[in-house]
Image 1: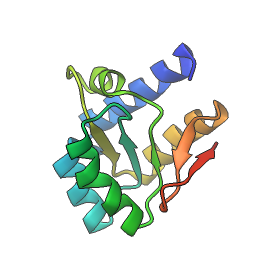
Image 2: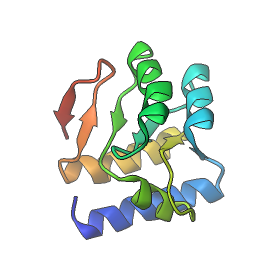
Image 3: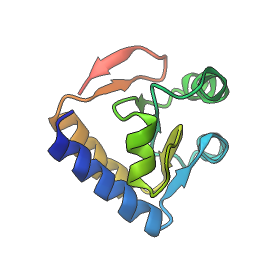
Length: 119
């Protein structure tokens, strides 16, 4: 993903955090997915195996698509932290806007069954 798209996604995630439309961390994302509130999920590809093991099976079971286009440092920078393993967007309009930015850049998403697809 190019720097412009990364900055646009980070800006949208930051706005979402201030609007309380973004949940940060594996446990909060897991809760949002279980309750059906997560509209879009980011899982850092460099997150620990333990973190991925807690979240990825749930994403597959709930057939929730997720993106692994941003690493833990990029996700953390977007929400004012050093690193973040997972983020969940709970607002449908914000999720749609972020998807639009990512898919225009052919970011890689994962379908609910874990297979990779391009935007």
